[in-house]
Image: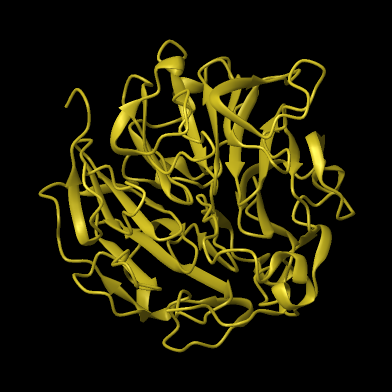
Length: 434
C-alpha cells in the first residue's frame, strides 16, 4: 500500500518525491520512539520498560554504573536493520548495511545475526537503531556511533574525522560527561548526558534548537534545560521528550498533529503537551508521523497520522491531540513501540498487540491485512514476551528466556533468519551462542 500525500512533504518538496516510504521508527524507538529505556522501569515485568527497542533510557548520570539501569537482553529495530543485545553486553546485528549501520566494518548486508566484534570488550548496555545509523552506550557511559552520516547524525564531525559520510565501524563520539541515554531517529540523534539533552543531524525543527539548521555535532537543547528529561523518542521529523514528573514535551513537524498540541503547526523548540499534563506519562514512542504515550496506570494514548490505522482508534482519521485507546483499557499495557506506520503494545500477561500497516505481516497476525484496531497476535512463545521493538516494516519480540522472534519485511535480512523471506507471524530467530 502506497502512502497518501502528507502536508509535510508537500510543504517541503526537497524531501518528498525522492524520499522512499521507508522511514525510521524510532522507537523506540519510538520508536520510538526510538528510542532506549524509560523511567518506569520497575513497572516492566523484567524491571525495564520503554518504547521497546527504541524508547529512551533512564537518565542515570549520577549513577556510577549503568549496568544497574538497563535490563538485558534486549532487541532493537531500525529502518531495515536489527540488533540483539545479550545478558553479558555482547551485541549482534542483522539486516541492511549499505551505510555500515551494523558496525561490522563493511557494507555487506547480513541475513543472520552477527556479533559486532569491535564492541565485544565494551559491555554495551543500550542500543538504538535509526534509519541507516546506530548508536550504542557502554557500561561506562561512552557513546559509539556507526552508519550513515550524510546529515552528520552521528555527531562525529571534528578535526580527526572531518566530514565523513558513513562509518562502517562503531566510532567513539566525544562527550565531556557520561552519556546515559540515546535515541536514533530517521537522520537525527539525541543523547542525555549529565542531565542535559543534546541533538545532532538533520533538522526540520525536530532537534528543538529554535531553528531548522542541521547540526554536525551534538548541541545542547536549551529549551529542555531544567526539565529533568529522562527519555527522548525520535521519530521521522518530530521528537518527544519525557520528564521525570511525567510531562511530555514535543518539537518538530506537526502536519498530522503528531506533537499532540491540538493543532498542525510545527515547532522549532520543545513545547509542553499541556493536554497530557495530568496523565503521569511513563513511556513515549515516536513513529514516522505518529506518537504513542503510556501512563502509570497502563493506559495508552495516540496522536498524529492514522492513514493506516496505526493509532488503533477504529478509524483512519488523524488526531491532533492524544486520544485514549479505550479498546486496550483493562489490559495493563507495559510497553509500546512505534514503527513507520504500525504500532505494538505489550501487556502485563506478556501478550503482544498490533495495529496499522501490515503489508509485510509486521503485526505478526498471520496475514497482511492492515488493522485500525489493536489486535492480539497469536501466541508464539511458551514464555511471556518481555520486550518489543518496531522497525520501519518489521517487528521484534523477546521472551523472558531471552529468545528472539521476528515478523514482517525481511528483504534486507533484518529478521535474522538466514533467508530473505518475509514472515507473517512472529518466528523464532537463531542467535549465535544460544
